[in-house]
Length: 183
Image (cartoon, rainbow, N blue to C red; front, side):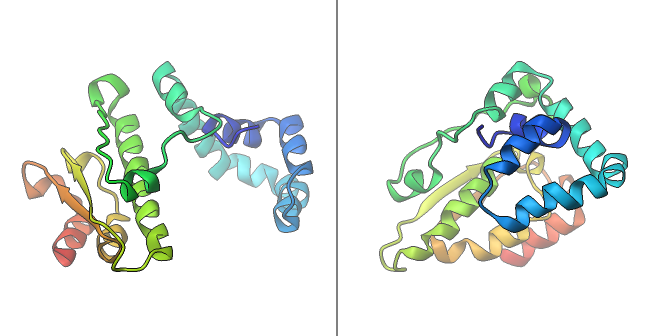
């Protein structure tokens, strides 16, 4: 099975599916968690974090568009290839189409994938790295507390970011501090 969000939902809720996946897992510690720890703490997990996660996954997967975006078995976007070959990539993430929470999540995921791609450039000499420009309009819709790490760590890997929004009051305090601390 693919590693999509749909598979994650099944992993948490479908015992037969989970057993099939765990059986093929080469990592002993991962198998031990799912074979021993998860069953022994299942009630605790289901009452708390798993229940919350399943509810959130159900919300995400409720629309066909989000299910089609997040439910793919493989990722067809190679963000590192986009960066290294200076591709122009446009994402239209409309709150009107996806809903505010889904749009925020999708925008945050794309931002994080670009950050991961930038960090993977550690295998390339600093002189060989080319600038990659990342523009985000309505930045407040995608800003999370992890932006501090993205802003402080990605420059050396030549990820150049431009964020746009209307006014500073749209940011939570930690995001505002991260932005001003890194620009």
